[in-house]
Image: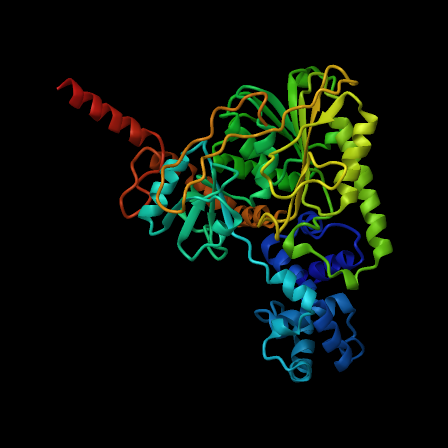
Length: 520
């Protein structure tokens, strides 16, 4: 019963646009986050259909239920996997089941459809019909792209080389490519599931949407640097930063939610991150002049946002009260600007990357424009000239991402850099990260990203899914940590089983053999 009470509560607040759905799910402290998130998302998707069925059967009056609770119960009864409760609610719902099923059937006949999904409004069908590629970032703290590709080929996957266009990201079941922008990102067909795969469980793969990889990739902190991940949980970007730094330096990571921070700690442990300093605190309370942060030169700021870029959380604009939406966006933008201004106060700061998973200008270009006006000592760094979607005018230096133009979740990224002369008009060169040369799709060699340099520079439903997986298996993973460490010392078999990991020791032994042969 607790599941439906909490789901109804979140659904009601979500429909009133009081907070981001993902944020409310996390803050609920519910024992099974994955189950709760799925129920709320699916109920919200079928909201208009469920409401019509409930009203036609007069369920609210006869069962004495409120609409949000009735929606989640009717969803599971008619469309989901069946009711997951007992007691009086189950008795009431089963009593009305025949009438509810008849109402659903009449609705299908009326609209001349046979599937439940066909009852959805056209705009919602289009939204939820979007299938994005499955992205997996190779965790270079534990393996290399080359070894990961070799492992996958032995595991039955077909490697097609480096992608050179968006069209190359349309893949069949077992095909995969290396992304054309991020050289440590592998791209698979949408239905590929790695949650039970060895590479994921051993921390060699981080399941992360491509757009979510941009902030750390573009910030590109040098090895040994000190930096801050201001709103860090669930931790995918933190692990990416640590990999770029090669675990050398100091990575301060803050988050206000203790439970999310605990989950993040488990994720970082699995990813092999050791340079982190986690703190359960509000970034806005961090003192930039503290001796602890005197060497901080880089900041990654990905603050709370509307989540409007995430496919599963987008709204059908026709059903949303625009006054409520605008009020909430204004509140979020005010918070984001405060965080951004605070992040620029660290004395030795060189660069700060700002990102959101929002498509709204108010949370993106407007926040950056206001910040630049208030902080004339900083300027925007132009990013990736080959990226297909730019920031809205007058800020084309920034990047945007979308399902249509970049085959990712909706996203926004801006990179701010401190400059010595606020009045200088000298143009700053665009951040161009080295990437593998595009090749025709087919077998080809993998190339590692060059060492990071100071001048080269990025829930994301995939993050959500990864965190959910961690929360379900956290205790088991802690018990297996020692086992995994032993496993990593032995080679991988041709069958692709965990006799070892795709790592660097195997190559070293090969080199020793070659050297011995040469001596002979």
